[in-house]
Image 1 (cartoon, rainbow, N blue to C red):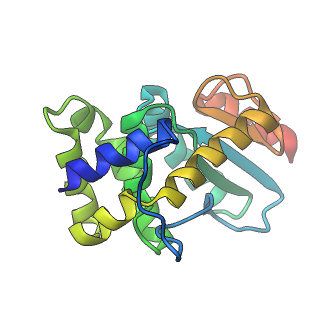
Image 2: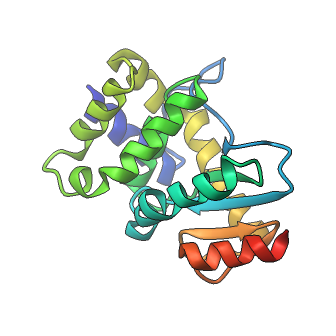
Length: 198
């Protein structure tokens, strides 16, 4: 059942003529994921894709250092925005938001990046996605309802399109420090941009 719902969801996302469930109420978590003090003077935004190996590297190797040195100390607010590129990316992005809790969404986001190689090379990626959601406390019923919801998919596409319009994004991850794109996504490049912005 989950696989059929995912297929319907990704077909809808990239082919608007497909009919899917429309909910009177919003399903799933909307908006960006924010880490740290919302009033921090420096804002670092990442536009990332779950199927991008460089984004997985950023999530597992760069982001923990950024959190330790700048986010947890109150100097930086880190913002993650989805940049959906393909059907698996859409399926994972929706799955990671099949919750009302920001902490659960963050935990699933981190797990999907950490286990990217495993679920992307799996014989049944959808089963792996369902397993990660289940481990995070999302029931199969909630997941099926959420992943077939038109509004959540359109929200993620709008997030991507606004990123393209505002920042001319043509690659991921795209990192923005206080409104300015930086050319690289290594920790050294990010640290230099943050230090220059202070």
